[in-house]
Amino acid sequence: MIKLGEKIKELRKQKGISQEVLANHLGVSFQAVSKWETEVAMPDVILIPAIASFFGVSTDELFDFNIYEIERKVEKIVDEHRRYFDTDIIKSERILREGLKKYPGNDTLLNCLINILVEMKRYNEVISLSKALIEGTIYEDIRLDAYRILAEAYKATGEYELCKEAINNIPEIYFSNLYVKAYLLEGKDKLEAAIKEASICFEHLIWMLEISAELYLKSGDKEKAKIIYSQALGVLKSFENDFETDYTHSKADFEKTNEIQKKLDLIK
Image 1 (cartoon, rainbow, N blue to C red):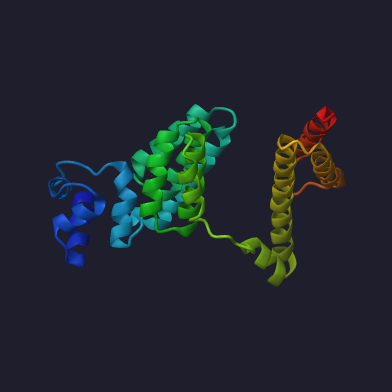
Image 2 (image 1 turned 90 degrees about the vertical axis):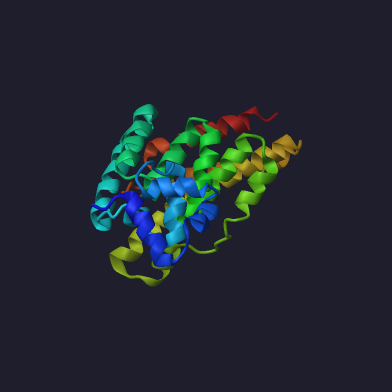
C-alpha cells in the first residue's frame, strides 16, 4: 500500500504544482507539506478531505485504498455505531473514532461523527469538522448535510447571522429522489419510494405544525395556536391505525399525539 506522503507528492507532481501552491491552498506552511511528503509528519485529520478535494480524488483514493472494499467496511462501522446511538452515545462515538483511525478523513464517518457531536453539544468541534467536510468532500449530499449541521451549531452558540449564512448554502428543493421514484417507477420500486416519502412528509408536517403553533402562542395568538395544534392532532389520529412497514413509524412514535394534546390542553 502506498504511503500517504508519497501519494500527496505523486498527485502534486501530476498536477504540476509546487509545495508552496498546495500549502497556500490548505493554509499551512510549505514546510508542513514537505514533512508530509517525506513521512516526517501526517496531515491533521481535518485537512484530509480538503487535500483529497484539491486533487479531485476521494479520501479512500488518497490513501490508495480499494474503494469498494472500504465502502463495505465503512458501512459496517456506520451500522455498528447506529446500534448504540440512542443507548450509549459514548460508545457510538468511540466506534466512529476507531473507524477514522483505520480510514482517516473518510467523509461518511466524519459526517456521522459530527451528528453525534451535535447531540453531545460539542459545538466548537462540530463547527471545525463541518467546515472541513464542506471544503473537502466530493460528495454533494455530505456537503449539504454538513451545512445543515454547521447551521445548527452556529445557532446553538448564538452566531445567528452565521447560522443564516450556512443555511443559505442549502438549495430549496421542491422534489426529492423518492418523489421522482414514486412518480415514475413501477411496482415494488414505486410502492417502496411512496411509503418512504410519505413517512418523511408525515414527520415534517407534524414538526412544522408544532413550530407554527408555538410561534403563534409565543406572539399571544392563542386561537391560531389552538387551531394548528388541533390540525396536528387530526393528522396524527388519521394515522393511528396505519399498518407498519419497514419504512413507516412504529406505534411508539405516535406518543406525539399525547404530547400535542397536553400542549393544547395547557392553552387557556
